[in-house]
Length: 539
Ligand code: ACM
Ligand code: ZN
Image (tube, rainbow, N blue to C red; front, side, top):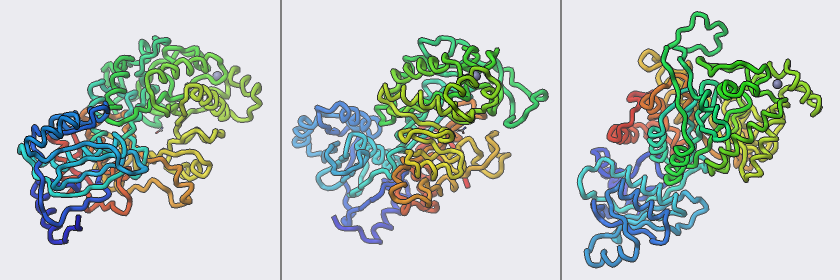
């Protein structure tokens, strides 16, 4: 197929601008080669889509083609017979694309029909998503697809998004919508923040008090209080807040995500951010409590007692059930913002330090991390933690989630830790989207405009090419202190997720914010049609 002339390219772009087929979607595919002939092949609603019959995942992919493109799934052999009779250009889903990247796909539209071929089943899924987005503006029953070869593969293997369901609870149905939104943007990891000082959201069969006592609070502070020591003038909303995910719901959501090639990485934040758990099991704290599920924000001094043997027992019981429910290789154990104040005064913690010949309280956290890492290894799992976990020393196997925005990413990669980039200056979607805060709902007090998200480069310049391989990818984080409804989650997520999806997917030399903006304007129509809320103006 010849490269298309510039004039024809301009003409086709012009057509696209009028709301016709547009392959230049989000995230932008790596290579789109339109055929110089200008010919088209019709994609007709109700037409058969053929898939290799023996492959259940490909059958599921064909069902997605049905949902997104209006096609009728049929095993390949039968479809071939039918095509001969009916003289309709075949639409085929196939494997066997040669690529090292399992998420790679190629879409070929030519006189033979429409072929979506993947290096694996996930690649085919992404190809279907790209076709779906390309024809979004077409409302008729027959869409004329310009002949094209689209070759695409994501830049990073880890393309994540985190949702904090601890500060505010979001219902299971919305979690599925959230997953649909991630899939639309080529995201393949959903980091699920399930526990924190303000709520414990995961049912644990062996520890029923966690949700019985830890998943509800009677009211919540109004407005920001981060850093405020004196809450005597604080206003509380008087509204009970709560909820948790049953084991059955979790299994259902994990399966829902897996069909969309999204792995759920659960996070149990420890040993800090544990007040909801301490409310349920106060003997796990250094002072013995009593504790209450927090009704305001910030970092709490009450954490798990590192010297009490029951603490490790508790962690292992929780993580055993986590591993039962979540097949993810990676299990996130938090590790951020753990003050040592209680450990300094606690006889049990001090005795543990003596026993282990530790010099600093920080090393108690390392001791917990190592125990947890060894425990997870017995289940064939690996640990991820926020970047503070490096502080007291860490085994090379641990993966570091970089968030504090200093040089923690460089240090971790140089020490050969795998790194996931969630740099707060570029990836924290709880920050304001516009400089004029008065026009938006209350958010965390910093700004993160769309253009800044888009500009992000996750690989720091300081790394050699060899060290850069330790950067697995990037992730946005939606913390929910100030986000209490699904609509508001979507508003904070969109369209910034579109921007970070190109950070995660598209090669940096192809990124151009000015060129991204008109594509986003088209893409937003899809958000609108699907009922997703989004920030309609951006900077
Ligand atoms: C974090 O934002 N505390 C990871
Ligand atoms: Zn203690």
